[in-house]
Length: 291
Image (cartoon, rainbow, N blue to C red; front, top):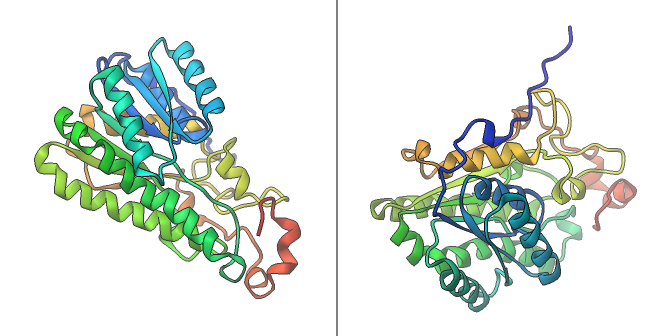
């Protein structure tokens, strides 16, 4: 008997095209990958957007593409989320252009495969600074305006820290902090009309993150045995984004939504265990990204 394969659905076939008309999205990490797809989806439903990243050339090209494909406005704002001053400047530029911020996606992230024994202190700190501290800095810079609009946050996390995942101590620590930060934000800001939720993507094919966490033989954490019959698509994350930002989710805050096709229940380690932790040198040839 052949297993069922779930369809990939475009958000425009489910949600009204104008549900975010007049709204403004501020997205860190929006120049590529999952966050770019999230931004495009929100724009297709009527919002204008600012995308934030460190590489201005790629950011500008992405902003032009997003504006062209959606018919909406998209501002490229160069900033490193680890630098509060740069983020405040990006927010100021957004307010100068659009006069408001309704939605925020905290999506800037970094990752690579490395065991604790082979991970430098600087490598650990860098990922925590980008993911966890970058999320906090983004919240601090945007919160006054999200309060005004009674808006909403989505933080892009992961499922790796739900159990011990070898070679992922840095991102596991960072994403656990992101989840906790979102929960506190939801509780503190809910009385002011602000919602905060987390989307935790599972294996999403065709993204830089998937490539970094996939071994040379094509395996990886969660890349096989997915109950819905396929790996994820960026549209799956986009659809969850539209729902959580929409009024249909007005009673949902402080939650973590794994969008993983049920893969976390069956996720393999991706590298041979215990060989990979006892002898990291023996698996270097399997890993695309650096140790």
